[in-house]
Amino acid sequence: MKMGDGVEQAIHSVAMLSGLSEGGVLSAAALAEFHGVSTSYLLKHLQALSGAGILDTVPGPKGGYRLAKAPKEISLLDIVLAVEGSAPAFRCAEIRQRGPNPVSDRLFAQPCTINAAMLKAERVYRAELAKTSLADIGIELAAVDDGSIAARGCAFLDIHERKTAR
Image 1 (spheres, helix red, strand yellow):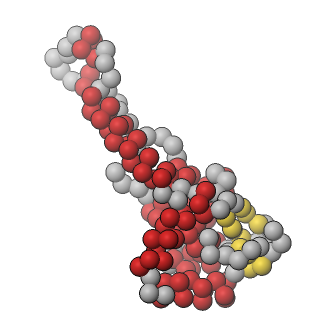
Image 2: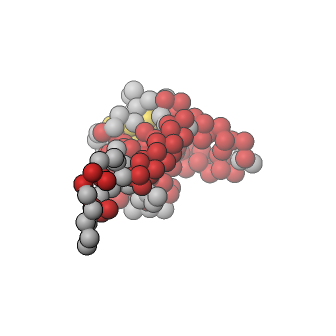
Image 3: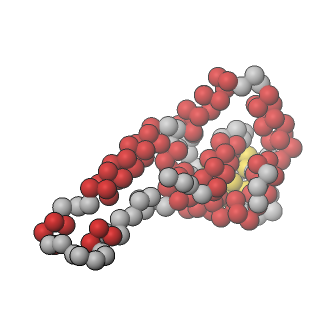
């Protein structure tokens, strides 16, 4: 299964926003700069995250984005579904019923076993993403960080975080 680049960008951006102080926001441009990605492409995903209730959008020249929920309430699945949509990754087009030498329709009364296997795997994959919260990711990162990653993020936030009323 291949996900679009937007998923990675969205997860990292949401993680970055979890480091904001109370009432702080970051602009899409600042998030894009920090991650070295296109602002216009990232903006599309930030809007999807906002539409899904994961991010709050603060309008205006001093506006930006912040988390709409606590990090422990945001799962990786929430982010993936906001960016990629909820449709299954595998879509069975019933090609088993095409081609030459057709067979009896009664042989297709049961769902396609390939489709069933793929959907079963996707349920497992989604369940695993649903179990992992943004807070869990932060805890795992803190366990391996020698302080360099946190210092980089804090230094960036010191410069780019905008203070607004909550």
